Amino acid sequence: MTAVELHSATPSQTRRIGERIGLMLGAGDVVLLSGELGAGKTVLAQGIAKGLGVTDPVKSSSFVIVNEYDGASLRLYHADLYRLEDPAQVAELALDELAAGGVLVVEWPEQAGGELPEEHLIVRLSYEGAKGRRIVVEGVGERYLGIVRRLRGRERAVH
Ligand SMILES: Nc1ncnc2c1ncn2[C@@H]1O[C@H](COP(=O)(O)OP(=O)(O)OP(=O)(O)O)[C@@H](O)[C@H]1O
Ligand SMILES: [Mg+2]
Image 1 (tube, protein in one colour):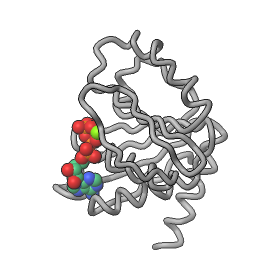
Image 2 (cartoon, protein in one colour):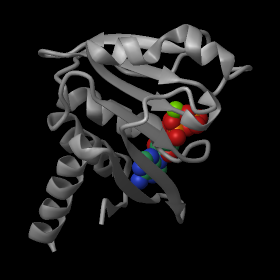
Image 3 (cartoon, protein in one colour):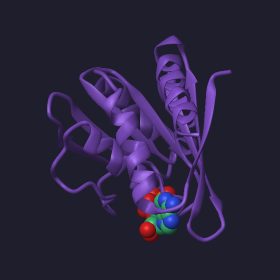
């Protein structure tokens, strides 16, 4: 199995799951965040940022598709493709080149039309009631399987 299913009851729990993921990321890593409007992708990205040691506040801006933040040792590139009109624009963003030198986190990866790195961690968030969220983390590629395994190990230890 290459996925782990987690559950969050509050925004801060979602942020902590993101932080756990952020602590395991290295240079060149790519994390895709999938889920409906308001599912918690940005909240999870804020947790990843915390795990990377980013101190500036992370939020999605209306006009900038990729926001950059300095972490303790890695740069975070936070892309929100929601407003992208044409998948061809993704190629122009050269997200894979950005990813090589830091960590790339992408909201609305479905908008990219297959232009994103083939190997990645994908986090699928969905609603479980008003405040509950189901968070499924899947690794695509050898590098990411270790992260999934470690997240699963932590779950076992908790329950
Ligand atoms: N368990 C939870 N985890 C995450 N967010 C939650 C949770 N419960 C409630 N929320 C609320 O849901 C909202 C999630 O917003 P967020 O901006 O992270 O969503 P998003 O998936 O990035 O949406 P968008 O597609 O608009 O970018 C926030 O207002 C947050 O407070
Ligand atoms: Mg968002």
